[in-house]
Image (tube, rainbow, N blue to C red):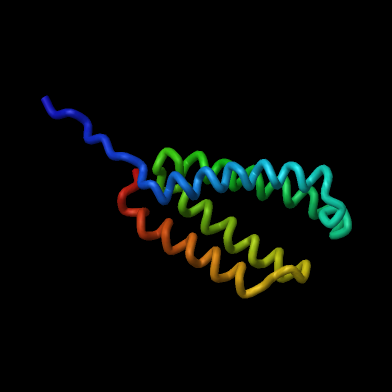
Length: 113
């Protein structure tokens, strides 16, 4: 009888997930305590919470090596870039960092379920 093939999560994916989980904790802290979040506007607090929830869902899926999580991350990367432009916080570093993240996720996409 064939055994189901087990594969380990790549270390880079593990690191991305752990950083995302820590980032979500930082997001919650910022939503409730950072004055700059309130200065942007009330809508931004709601957006920040919603964005954090979507990133949490994508991170859990990525931890489980699910393809849908990569597509969800792509969505969050695009919408975050748009929002950063809208509030005047966009910079080339953001584009480079998120492009690197996107490249890593797309590299591992064929190994996911």
